[in-house]
Image 1 (cartoon, rainbow, N blue to C red):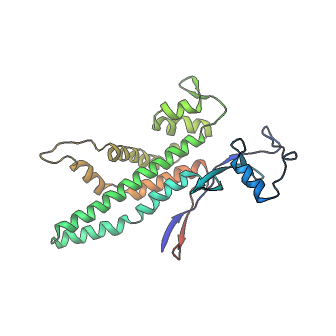
Image 2 (tube, rainbow, N blue to C red):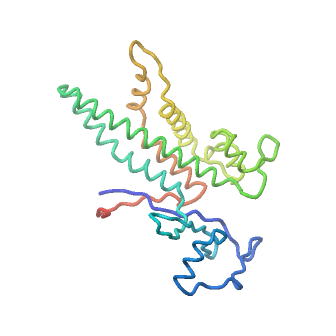
Image 3 (cartoon, rainbow, N blue to C red):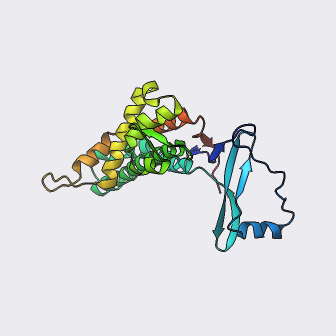
Length: 255
């Protein structure tokens, strides 16, 4: 049975009776496909989808000269989906490697299986980290200064210059008035471990040991519980935005 991650959409909180009201009464309705085409082609025209409590942006895109509108998906769910899909394969491949090592009769198969494990480790760690980092940036407010080390910083400066660990452990808990690390210290340890693993796989610095360069990285990959790190990321995201990451079981294949 296949498993997947639901696509979610990026919305902004909206209170029709609060400080960000939207008056749609004087906006003319589009009555034909031609009017819609003109509106899509107009660079000054922007589209939003308004519900009772949220506003959603609508992307204007072009693919092979075909213009279309797309309710903006949240890329956090795309990144997490890559990590989640990859890590589901890990137990099966590790079991095959174990069986091959016990049989001790096929050196090429050992390399093939280890390469598969390396790919799974890379995808699951890098993309689960990207999902979390993108999510933390989304939590930063757009239109107010953010207090950091006694000073006010714009969202852009926080995104560009503040280390990931400080966003995760200081800035976001302060903004959201709750602290994932204090609520789930063991899961926070997994996220810190994920950051280290992601850095190692991204930079792949050579550490010479005899004639080898990556022995420590390769051993780390065999010893690390990548599933626990991916699910720690899911737990952290849903702690601050409940049900943003939803996984499901798929009984039939998508054609």
